[in-house]
Image 1 (spheres, helix red, strand yellow):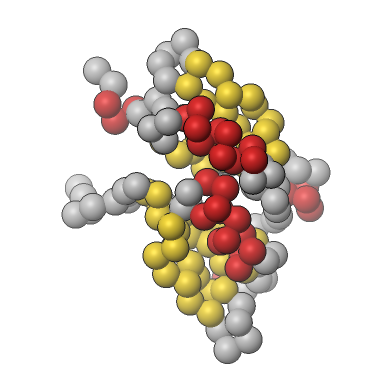
Image 2 (cartoon, helix red, strand yellow):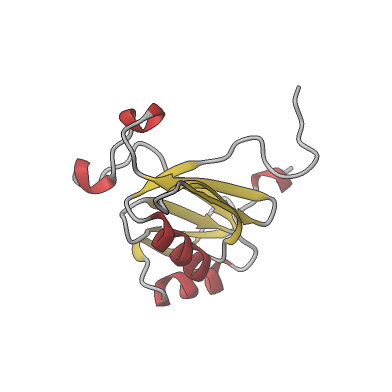
Length: 141
């Protein structure tokens, strides 16, 4: 089994029409930190890595090459998604308030969960779905 020295072996990858704006917003609203941003000669984001604790998301500008030809943006499919990035946070209520203040569209209000922890769901400015919660599946008995 391949185990990383740190971080996660599963890393969500998202596409944005304006990746530079998305990077700034994700860092401001959700608390991600820029680890790397690689641009082409026209300034288009070809690959970016944002970290959150030991987790990471990768993103780039939309483009029809490679795997991008199989991806759609939420507004192209009536706001629907086939997946959602889930992020574990330590203070979910504070995270919810931060995201809401930054303009995240809350689609599932903050709530304490019967199975433990708390959580909420939201959309970023380009419509991607996110779930944030304090329940940590790695720490359950």
